[in-house]
Length: 301
Image (tube, rainbow, N blue to C red; front, top):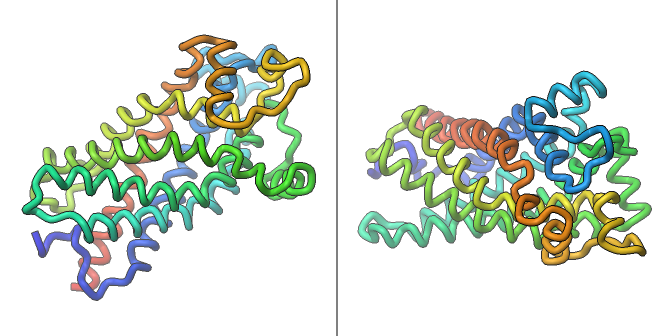
């Protein structure tokens, strides 16, 4: 196992993992961003009249016909700017924790190390991506008043203050900690099943990443809906929440509002769109990351 590509040379730099992770993250978010836009709109628990989507395909068709396909890319700039450093930290910290605490002799106990590695990496990742998500989700909303990511960022800072960009940080961590812990566990077990020798086999990485993404994204979708409500502060839903049209603060208040408006169904709004976003996104992200590891290993050798 010491000579496989997954173990980069001892003299390899942390920047190698960070470069691989940054490239993987940017490609992941950019290539499947339209599905993310549809997911955000589907998760609005009280969409404006006339823009209710029956599903992902109907959503794409509606936006293409009434708004133009370019609107499925609104906010992508914020995500690209955030995804590079966020994924660089994610993959580098994940590899560091895994290398520090995993050992072949531990057997199934390594599962705990995998989960801890995923949780630690997620906390660093979300510290950067939470503001980017807040900006891009405001731009993804129907009839968003913002022209681009930069204008949205400036207006939020001027009118609401910087802390607003981290309003959903608790919800983001509450969602992503179990998401990435489940994801890492399934991904590593998938690798043990499809690629026990840990060779560079692209299809094995794509298979493991896709299965892990499908399961973890569906299980944590209720938390993602709560995060979307916190980020967008949907005015139509807020009118039912309070006569004063107050803001929603915290994941529990968000969950209560969703249940009051739509019951249990509301927690699974956009679940299919989220799976369509995360499955190819994860396959791209981990596929590119594993390729870079293989490339760097080959170059160093």
